[in-house]
Amino acid sequence: MSITIALTKGRLEKQTIALFEQLGIDCTEVREKGRKLILTSANTDIRFILVKAVDVLTYVEHGVADIGIVGKDVLLENGKDDYEMLDLQFGACDFCLASVASYEPTSPRRKVIATKYPNVAANYFREKGQDVEIIKIEGSVEIAPLLGLADAIVDIVETGETLRENGLVIFDKLAPISARLIVNRTALKKQTTPIFNLIDQLDAYLQQGGEAE
Ligand code: PRP
Image (tube, rainbow, N blue to C red):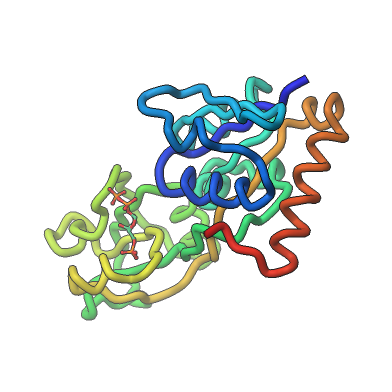
């Protein structure tokens, strides 16, 4: 029986296959995929599917994929933390509150917050006891406070370069983010040994200080 792994297309995909290759899992077909979206590993019973981050959750929830590799940001935003089995440690960044330097986070005025992560932002301000208006943005969130759409943003910050180049500063760090391995519960019961074998191998490799690249 093969294991199907849903990979988040893009940056995480490249780091995931680099990590899997360190364990001796052949990922040649993923490296040379062209436009193909279902790929096999030549030397293992692993099949990869390449999908967008949120769809990794959907495929794993429905049991079409046994395992998923997705950012913690997506798990937090969608309230799916309980699917998580392993922190893969790459793709490290932080959820941050950021704005122009003149932003006053403690002023009592009701603020407008732009974000790709409305649930994460809402939880953060709810915990602070602040009532805010949240505007959902799909990308390039950093321009929202510059153009007056919002007072501040909640977004992921990796190197900080996007903030710096757009004259924004960090006011608070909400949570650390990295790639996580998630598992479908039924698959775990049906394929306990191969799934735990893979998780144990990844865990042992990461524990000894191994990196994806
Ligand atoms: C993410 C994030 C920031 C940027 C942070 O955006 O939303 O904009 O990366 O990275 P940095 O701290 O290294 O500059 P992404 O590249 O996914 O593009 P998007 O804005 O279109 O969503």
